[in-house]
Structure formats: C-alpha cells, structure tokens
Image 1: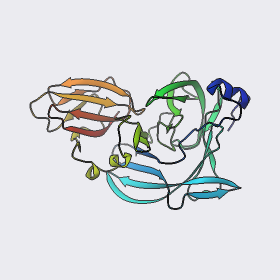
Image 2: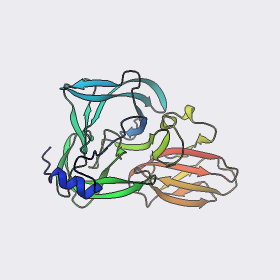
Image 3: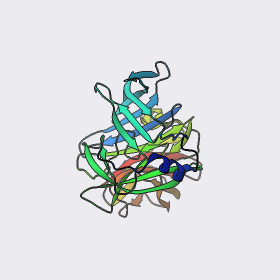
Image 4: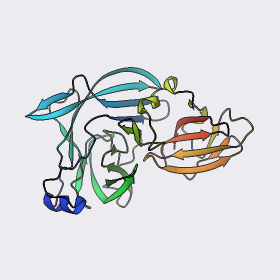
Length: 299
C-alpha cells in the first residue's frame, strides 16, 4: 500500500466525535446488493455483475479472520448466464475492507477510509493494478445519512478526481473496480446498490427495489421497460425510439448515481455533447406514467 496514515484515534474523534473504541462500518455486513457493469469498447458486449452476501454458507476464515462470502450473478449482453462464488469481504471495523478473490491465495486491501489528502494507495481492482493518490476527503449525504467520501486521482493526471470510494456504498466504478485512471480498455460503473431492499445508489435512491433487475432486460417489470436508443456508444446525440408524438421527461444519471441532465423532450433526439465520457443511465417518463430506462456509453 504505500499509504501514510495519521494516528487512528485522531481519525475516530474527528470523523464521529465518538470514543476511540467506536466501530467504523465501511460497508454493510448483511442484506446488501451491488449491480455493476463493465464495457470494454466497440464490438464487445456489456457485462453485468450482481453481488449479494451468501446466506446459505455465509462465512470463510483466513488466518483466524472471518470473511463474508459473496454470490455473484454474471450477465453478458443482458443475458444472465449463472450465479457462483464471488469471493469474500471482511470489514475490520477500522475503516479498511479486505477482499479475498476466488482462486487467490491471499486477501487484498480493497478500501481504506483511514487516509488523508496526499496519501498514495494501491488501486487493486482497476483495469490493472496501479497506484492512485487521495485527492480529497469529505462527506456527502446518501439517502439521508452522512457518508465519508474519498476522491482519488490518477498519478499522471493531478487535480482530476477519476473515482470515489464512498462509505456504505463501495467504489463508483463497481464493488471491486475503482477505475480512477482513464483507460481505453473499458468502462466500469456501479449502477445500483441496495441495503435491506432500499436503493442507496443509482437512479431511484430511497425507493424500494432490487438491483438484480438491472442485469437483464427480460427481468425488468412493466413499469420499467427497456428503451431502444442509438447509436450506443454515442458521441454527441442519442436517438430514442418509440416515443410517439407527446412530450416526455428525460433524465440522465451519471456513474456516481447523480442526475446530470434533465430535459423536457418533444422530439426523439437528445443532445449529450456536454457529458463526460462514461457509462450512463437514461430514464424516460411519459405523461401516462410509463417509465422506461436504458444504459448507454458516451465516448
């Protein structure tokens, strides 16, 4: 890791105002789910991953430490292929989360919330393993609660936050992908995260929902039918199919789950030239109450 840390007792007091023995939950320990997507580039399919804790065989042990097993459902180009062992997580209660990947002999440090600006940390599960720098440490409100947020910059692009770690959520590039440094080798995005069936991250934060619905178009219910959009990937404009003649409300959500574009649209063409290259969600709401959604990539 190459991380320089201040004393842990100071971190606990400054963050929470609680005694030094207080625990710090970096990730939920149960009833949580994450859906992430990954897209290598033109000519490649979308990959989807849905992670939940394994309730049937929940624990595994490494050097005396208990790790919680994950089940991962994999989809390719919106077709679900199966579910299997997805590794195991351990939140040590002090701000660090470790991940024991399937087939690997040892766990690795996945997140570290006990850092300060200027620290260098290893981005273990980006497109490739690399060092990134902590650019900012602050707090944001997620679904009514304050969460610690770590902004990360690529070492060769100082001043540009490429990704975040967010307490209680994970990495915005996906549960195991930080993707702080831009790459031509793919785009990863955390598109939905729930705790106790309440959405914490994604297009409908605070609503009751199951992130697994975002894995395959065939699993979407009637209220959230899939959209036909093209081209995808897109550069400046998106064409939305089957809108009819009425005006619709259009909203675009970025890779961090926040709304980045809201527009009342009367035609079928949406200008996305101002958006940064990333993976987005498009939501179209019609006057009848019909809601449809689709993913797209902006070059």
